[in-house]
Every structure is written in structure tokens, then in C-alpha cells.
Image 1 (cartoon, helix red, strand yellow):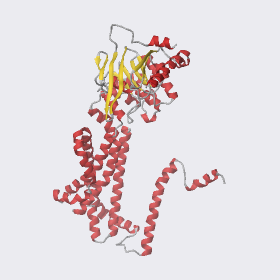
Image 2: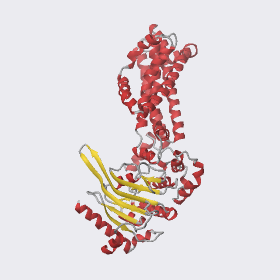
Image 3: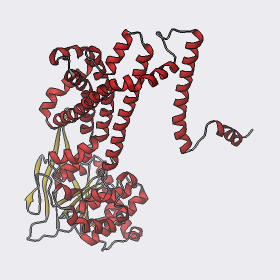
Image 4: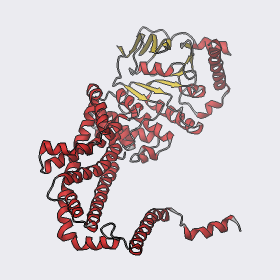
Length: 269
Length: 273
């Protein structure tokens, strides 16, 4: 058998080419997930596992269909709102703080080590403090969510602002650009991909912040619903709520990724 | 032949009463490092007349780039004075144009916007300079690429854009620090021809740093040979070829004699060190 024969034989199994490559990148993980789901469904049925312990995927989907409009959506809305607001606030705050730190050497020397130190604290442990400070309303959840989601934005943005090619900075000096011009024309556009990588992490962190806040105190929201359902031993509902949360997380991340593409096309970074 | 060339070449620029356009007077650069003081430029002393194209030729590490940075106001001098057009250079100036070793284009801007970048920084209306940008880009054959991003261009094209950017504000003095050293030999020949063309057209005063002997002889009116340890200008050689210069000139015996002469002078510098 020649090498060409082998290649021709392989072709139908693993298609090559650009389009086929993209297709494969989508199909393979989906197929892998499906295999796990089918195994899960089969195992739960064959071994007769109690649905309180682990409901089969079909049951979770049934719960989702049944309760999406009457219950899940109602609880999803406050969670989504608070996550989006917290994300927006932490993005603006994070970029602003990074800009401040990169522009002032003294501020940077004073604050940056502290920012890094804060990054290392298991911030979730501080959640109850926010309730003590700001009460049981949404402001404490928002504040906590901002608190945990803005660090990745600060650190990534700062890295982007500082990582500028020294030759470009020398060019700015040669062309007598002011600090502000250098920031606006060179540092900021250069930092755009970094800013977005920080913001993508922030989407996840913002959701985590809101959910943790809801676990501690709330009368609505998916975190509240999860806690409520677990008290009722409604495992399928818990997983259905988590499914909604995942879907939201994906869409949220996707929107930020689209915003990134648009911005980068505009600035071409 | 050596003697004839050096006789014609050495010695200061023709004596006139008018002060030279640019003068580098006993300039020295010493870096203080943890391991002690390092002499980057031991002594540089020369002057340049207006419209002259001067190449500074030397091995790597001889301090020629540092010298250019000092002339451009991007580095301070440790001793001595640099005067251009009657005033001492203390910082980068608006009547200077700069071209660096790497093209250093802004990757998120188009070719045209990169060329217009100095104007944008000067708060000038880029519209008013569009014609000049077009003229420059057409001269280097890149007007059709004006909307492309730097990453879509070859290394040689990027460096041509950088030269256009250096010329956009109509500088009186163009400073070029090994602009073609990162290019392959063939693009380098192209670039030399392109630069020679630009020269015939604009006739700026130029300082051109290079470690290529042929490049220096092809482009310059005068070649300053810089040696290493001590970092001084060891020879000042006038290049007698008329302009416009053609690539074929590089095949003449005279061209190669001058190149050979310069090579020997550079080697002597090595042996001394």
C-alpha cells in the first residue's frame, strides 16, 4: 500500500481543509459532550439512581421546559441585570484605575503591589462583610460582584498599557508626543486586546459575585432559586437553573467577544 | 590609490566663513553601569553642510547608533556640543525626521495613517498633508497599499513607509539608524535605489547609520568611518560619484576601490582594538 492510498483512506474519517477543519472544531467537542450525556442518562437509568442524588439529563430538560417561563426566567432576570451592571462598573473602574496606575509612577509603586496582593486573597470569603457594610439589598451584591470582577480588568489592562514596544515609545519621543498623546495614540490601542482578555474573565467573575451574593441573602435570582431548590431536594431544578446560568454566561462572554472583534476591526490592533 | 583617496577625503569640510549646518563638537557619551563607566562614544568631532548626505559606517558596538541618538536629541551627551541650524540640540526637534532600525509602524493604523502620524501628533490637519503623503508613497511605489495594515506588507515595504513618515513633515535633517539592516540583500538593494531616488528629489541633509560599506558608498556624499575602542571617527571620506546614482555604478572599478579602501580602514580599526 502506498502513502497516497493511506491518505485517501483517511480522508472520509477525518476531513481536511479549512472549512472541514472549522467544522471539526465544532463537531468534535459537541460529539464528546453528547457521549457524556448519553452515558449519564444510561448509567442513571440502568443503576436506578435516585433523581434527588442525580437526575438524568432528560429530566433536567423536562424541568427546564416546564418551569422556564413560570419560574426560571423570573429569577434569571435579576441575576442577569446585576451581573451586567457589576461587569460594566468593574470594566470602567478597572480600565480607569489601570490608566491612573500606568500614568503615575508614585501611585503605581504605592498601589500596584496591593492590587496584586488583593488578587491573591480568596475574595469570596469577604462576601459576608459586604452584607454587614451595605445591607441585604442588591447594592451589597453589586458591590461584591464589582469587587471580585474588577481585578482581572485592572491587571490585564495595566499589562497592556505597559507592554508597549519600546521602539514605539521612542518614536513618540522623537515626534515630541505628549504623555497624553502617547497614552491615547499608542498605549491604549495597544492595550485593547489585553483589556478584552481581562473583561472576558470579568464576565465570569461578575456572575460568580452575584450568585454568591444571592446565596447569602436575597429573595430572588438564580442563586436564590438554587438554594431554595436544594432545600426542597429538587436536584433537577437546581441543575436546570445552572443550565440557564451557563447559557447566560456563554451569551455574555460571546457578546464581549463580539465587542472585541468590532473594536479590533475598528482599531485594527 | 589609497593615498589618493585619503588625500582627497581626509580633512575637514571645505573652509567657508558661514558656520556649518550641523556641527558635532568633541562629543562624548559615557554610560554609568553597575560594572563601571562604559564609553559608548569616546570622541566625535565633525561638521556637515546643508544638503549633504553623510553615512556613518562602523562595526556593531562602535557607538554609531548612540551618536545618532544624541544628534536626534534622544540621548544626552556626556560632554561636547551638537548644534544644528544654529541651535544646540537638547531634545527631539520638529525639523528632524527619524527612521529607525525597525520600521516601528503602528500596527492598528493603515499605511497612510502611519505616514500622517507625525502630523496628527502636531495637531496639524492631516488633510493638508494628504498631497505630500501621496507624493511620497507614490515615489516609493506604495500608494496603492495606502489602506493596508503594516502586517500585510513585507519588511522592505514597511521600512519604505517609515521613510515616508520620516519625510512627511518636510524635515531639514533626516536621521536614519540602520534602516535596512533587517532586510534581505535583494530588498536592501531596492531600498537603496528608492532612497537614492528620494534623495535626488528632496535633497535633505541626512545622517545615515550603517554597517554596510557598499550601502554607505552608494548613498552618501561623505562616509565617516567609526572605530570601536576607542569609539572615534577614524576617517572622513568624500565619495566623488555624481548624482543621480545608478545601481550599475556599484560594478565600476572606482566604486569597488573605495569600498576596498574603507574595508581596510575598518579592519585597521579592529587590529588596533
